[in-house]
Amino acid sequence: MPKVSYAPNVKAKFIAAASAARSAGKPWAVAFSAAREAGYNGSLPGIMQMLRGLKAKSGKAGRKLGRKPGRKPGRKAIVKAVPIAAKRGPGRPPKVNAETGGIEALVSKVVSERVGAILEKAIAALEELR
Image (cartoon, rainbow, N blue to C red; front, side, top):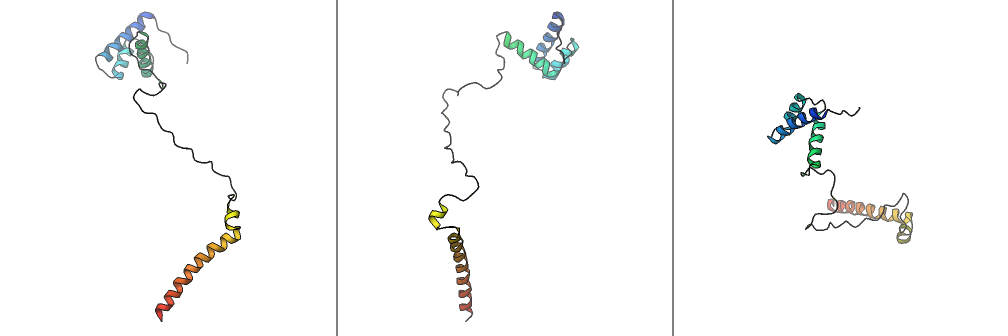
C-alpha cells in the first residue's frame, strides 16, 4: 500500500483535532473520529503512531518501544540454574554391564525378587489356612 502524504494544512488540522481529544482525556476512538472529520483517511493505529511519534520528536517523553538493556538499579542479579547433563541417546547406559554383570543377570535378579515376594505371600496365606 503506498504511503499517503497529507497537505501540511490538512495534517495540522487532524493532528490538532486528535491531540485536543486526547488531552481532554477522551479515548483513542474519539480522537480517531475527530481526526477523520478533520480530513484524516488512515486507520486508528496509524493516528496513534503519528501522535506518539510527534511526542517523541518534540522532546516530550514518548513511549519507548522495545526492551531496555541491563537490569534496573537495586535489583539483584538473577541466579541461573545449573544445567542438567545432556540426555543420552538410545542404547544401554555404560555402567549397566559393569555393575550387574549383564542384562541376563539384571533380569534374573528382578524376576527372583518379584517371584520370591509373591511366593512368600502365597506360603503365608496357606499356613494361615491350616
